[in-house]
Structures are given as structure tokens and as C-alpha cells.
Amino acid sequence: MSQAALAACLEREHARAAASFRLDDELGTHHGLSWADFVLLQSLDEAAGAMAEAALAARLGVLRSHLLMRVRPLEKLGLLSRRTDDAARRVVALTAAGRRSVREARETAAAVCGQLANLKAQRQLP
Image 1 (cartoon, rainbow, N blue to C red):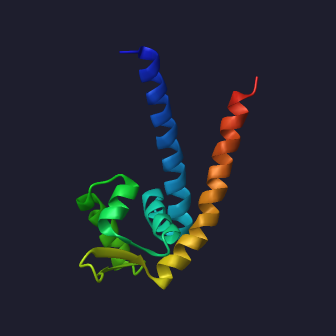
Image 2: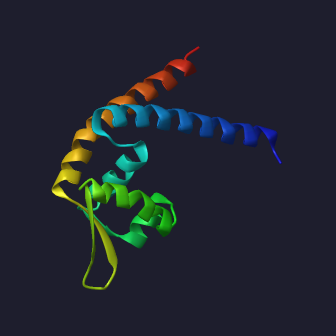
């Protein structure tokens, strides 16, 4: 096993965790969402507002059972709904409130990501 490869993976994971922590804090403070909530809502918004549960779980890289644990609280908040489509598939869809929430939160997420990118660029300067 390459120690350099392991160190690179750990460094990426630490950077991801730090970014997630910062995004959780800002999105939570201003919109009542976590970064994971935002990513889920954003994925639905990109898919015209609805996706089959299996496809959404695959897109997010999670098991369907884990997806449901993330969907249910957002459903209770009125940001998502679940229904069955014509092909008898379970579908997760943004509500009007969910669409509004993700659009408002997108500005905050973009601003934080911009700050994180600037910090990374500054560290790479000689």
C-alpha cells in the first residue's frame, strides 16, 4: 500500500469534512438545512423537480433505506412529497416550498463554496 496515496485520500477527506461542516453551519443558520439536505434538494431541482427513489439514491450514492431517512424529515417540513408514478415506482418530488428553499439556499452555498475555493487558491500560492 502506498503511504502517499493514503495520505492524499485522508487529506481530501479532511478537506471535504471541513467544507461540509462550514456549509452545514451556514445553510443551517440561514435556511434550516444541512449540506446533505441541500444536495438532495438540488439534485431534485436539477431533475425538473422529481425523481424515482431508486434513481435519486443512486445519484446521491446512498442506499435507498438511507435516502428515506433523509427524505422523511424534509417531507414533514413540507419541502418534499412522495408518491407513486404510473409505473408503480416511488417518486420523490419538490414541493413549491422545497423549490423556493433550494433556490434561496443556492446563493448561500455558492458564496461559501466561493470562499472555500479562494482559501484553497491562497494556500497554493508560493
